[in-house]
Amino acid sequence: MSVNNPDLTTISWADTARQQLFNSWLSSCVQEFSLDPSTLTLASADASFRRYFRLLGSDATKTSFIIMDAPPDKENCDSFVSIAALFHKAGLLVPQILSWNRVDGFLLLSDLGTLTLLQQLGTELDLCSTHVTPPLKPFIKALDALLLLQQASTPDVLPLYDEALLYKELCLFPDWYLSKHKGISLTTEQQNILDSSFKTIIQSNLSAPSVFVHRDFMTRNLMVPTSPHEERLGVLDFQDAVMGPITYDIASLMRDAFCSWSEEFVLDITIRYWERIRTSGLIDANGWSEDFGEFWRAVEWMGLQRHLKVAGIFARLTIRDNKPKYLADAPRFLNYIRSTAQRYRELFPLIRMLDKIENTQSNQAFSFGRL
Image (cartoon, rainbow, N blue to C red):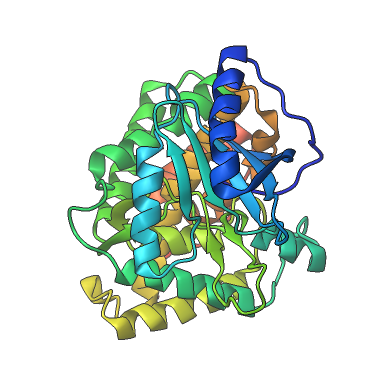
């Protein structure tokens, strides 16, 4: 859920029956929450089947609210509601659930504002550049939120980010990016390379300590607070949170889906994060608390899993869901994949295969473990 203000001021409904359900539910909320229905506008639509509307209160404060439209046959809001409560308890700034029509899939939420961290950075930086060095302070706040989340981790609360789920996500790359987008039928040799690479990637990822994982922790889902008295960044799009590798969310933040930070900045923030989690006791596996090189390798391999997955998701959004704008960022993920894979000898067969498919050439600079 990335709630911003696109150039969309009218709300269309493909299903008139659902429109009627919405109007009836909204009418029931108007008096209880002092809403002004005439201010209703479309706030955003994301990569899922959810849509978000914004409207104002009818009282003197003109408080802003968000409505989530989540068709129950396509979206399950139970996880959103339960995880919102979990994250709020952890100290994160998340939307408050004011009203929930569980049967029809409508929610009235508090509004965390109109400005994402990505948008704020975009006003100051050229995000089209591949060597952007953003200001430090917003990312320190992002780390603050991430640490709050991870320090609240409790077993048996969220679904496990286990081997089966990691493998299922990795398969999105051959199923959607290679097969359906590129039109490639893998040879037996290529399939064996993928299977072997996926097994190695998963083994690396599962060696990490387990914490609460947001699963899409990036600048587009972090909100700049509207109140000058609020220091925290708002956190959105958390409904798919799991219990999994501690390396995942820092990889998401520093290898952003929609912009690329300079390597120096990525290392700087990752080191700052590592210093904080090692002193908090969140890592002690594989010598990571004493060796940043080992931790950095694990972050890169976790990022590799995410990049392969997201390339597949972006292809699926284009082909299945008719949302072609996402595939425009696929080259960014191929670059992420290539830059990581070419540094590790174990991944050389993978990078060689991808270079052949993409008609590119990589410069191998292998890393063999501790840096």
